[in-house]
Image 1 (cartoon, rainbow, N blue to C red):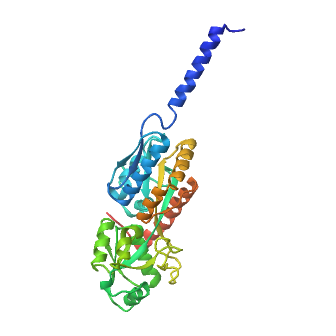
Image 2 (cartoon, one colour):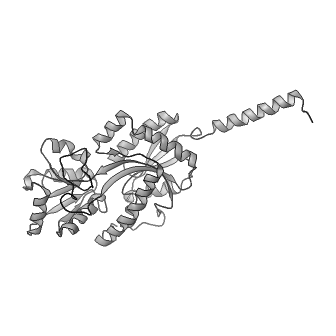
Image 3 (cartoon, helix red, strand yellow):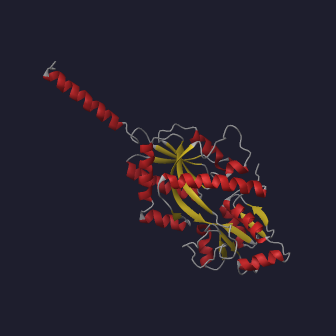
Length: 326
């Protein structure tokens, strides 16, 4: 049966309206995208997260805002995102403590989560080398001397930004690999490690290059070694611990973006594509370099592998070294 022309036009109008409605509601048009950072404002994770959010806002044509939810080594903010709707409007920008904290802390049931099961990997944004530094006042010239001093019975200490941090684990791995015992001094964050390393109050500070670049440049701190397989482009003259004979000492920090479990594949692809472009922007690259971050990028599987590998590896190391925080 042939419909009257007015009925055909009405049907076409309704179809077009429905399509327009769908487009109007297409992600991310409904509301701002929130990126949760599980640490206080002002730190490196917050600083670079805000830079990414600004660029994503421009590319998506929708406001992208940062929501700081600190506490319990990141597990409070992590759990919040794990329980959020998987609609692409709540994301988590996280450092590499993400898969470690659950092994180090006694996590309460209210914030318990599984980093492999409860999140959707989106992109690994950057890698951060771990650097051992010392003050000229300690008399330590290089890492070989520091290890020799420790073996001779001299009491040495090393500082890290916190119990269970990648820097803490690197220090314990060096203790094991070299057959020495440098005593760990735990700080609440990066800044106090730098301060006490500058003052010679710890023999060695385990830190990231971006936090001490200016002090290394002026000779106030001596870089001893990096804990990665390859030398960092940020300080190419500094040897790796692997070069010095400690083959297992390939460890670094990183940052990345994830969402709640079950995010739609098209939203994940969109975010991944936009973030890969953001990481290539000259001003973003300069900002990352100033913080000692080397861009990574790639597809979501890179982030998924990083999380899974670190969860397995660091879970075993935390248990082996008896690392525990209340």
